[in-house]
Image (cartoon, rainbow, N blue to C red; front, side):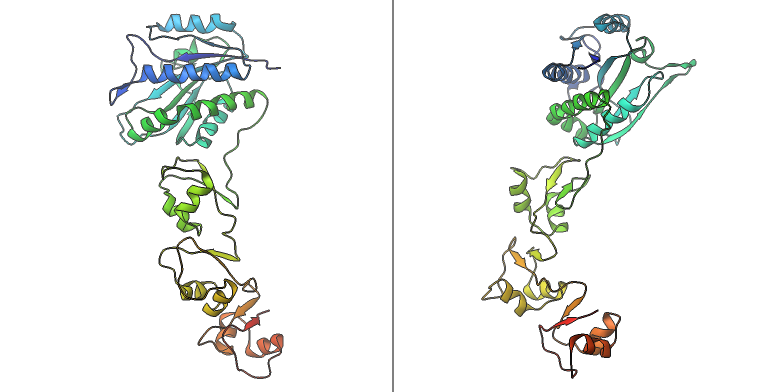
Length: 343
């Protein structure tokens, strides 16, 4: 059973439009976000009230009164005041959360982490004190709401094109993350960062599908197929599946590759690659998956053109005599494609 209630405050409204940019008013975004948040808490069975459902002007004192009237002045009442930031710094970007002096940072920390996991860049969570009396909170939503647990969530900067675009296109995903983080926190769960595994990749700032594909030995088309993508658009924090074939015994052909280049990079020969992959010519296609010799590991070496026992021994920090002993060689003669034990 849930032992908490939620009060949602759609910041600003009516005569108070909040921040504006690109013909977008903060009050409208706040209401849109808050209405969807109200629906999601309801769906999960959490007692929830929304104090502004229309574009109305609400004074600070009236706003506080509505908050306290919702479920009473109790410590298990969570107040979420939704806002969009603005700054004279045109480079300012990302979400931030302000929590009350009377509360721990646990809820704020978890909610911000959840927003980051959902793909929104984040800044920090913090408290702000009233300059004239540093024992009090700066914002009235914190200062005047009794013993409730209020959070001001700033989802990003309205005058930052990237932030505004992300919020308008992804606000449902961000709200879902906030709702889940609140419930998880009240159930004693810590919201952890997305973890990148062997066969996944977490999108970072500046990433493109081409860059990720190139780094992970695959192709843009393969990434889009695996992840059900219909465009090249990515969001920060997005978790992408990587091909399970991009392991040490396979290679996915990229633009500019040749059999010689692949063979040389992977300590094998063109003839061996052609044999393993039943190739009748040297022609390759981008995205083609090639098998690599399973013997070309750290303890073996495949002889290439121009190799000598001395050169191989010197490169692998051993001696000619040791190579001959390990491989049962009675002469220094080698053949291209021959597999030598190294140690």
